[in-house]
Image (cartoon, rainbow, N blue to C red):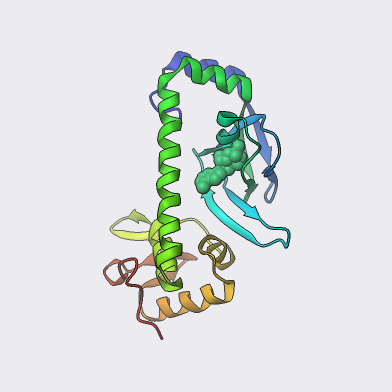
Length: 215
Ligand code: CMP
């Protein structure tokens, strides 16, 4: 978010921002609330989710260090669009609405960075709609694992701890179905679990859409 922002501007932002520490499983932002601040994750992790009256949840995305949230309400003045809940202890940088608007007005790089992030989120949302509409659960699980994996010494590894429940809430399937599909994918050699991390066996991962051989 702050990439390319000149030092003088960064100093100004540092003066108006304050730090806040929140424990795991704290709702930092609640859907429907009026907006007052923008948050930057310094450390820790959070999930962006929506739920219905029966308590069923959909996870829109997972956020990690360096990412920000709460900008949507500040930009268009609408209430918060989703809940944001910490998945671990978080160190946050908080910038109030008025300070954020003043920073935006004074800094084009900051505006551009925010716009780029919004475009990236729209692209991700488009890809998610596509996979929900066109893929079965095998394809959606395979795509999600690939999306969350990162290159590390020639291997694709998922560093983030992903529970089956979280995967289910991200791809619109039941936890039981996700467990079954992951077991099949692991048994067929598409990935292995090593020290609690998922290592994707790249050459064997099916192209999204093609998915694994169904049992
Ligand atoms: P706001 O609507 O103010 O409060 C909820 C926040 O969740 C929202 O701003 C965004 O920062 C974030 N958010 C909502 N939808 C998504 C999404 N699809 N991807 C990433 N972040 C999101």
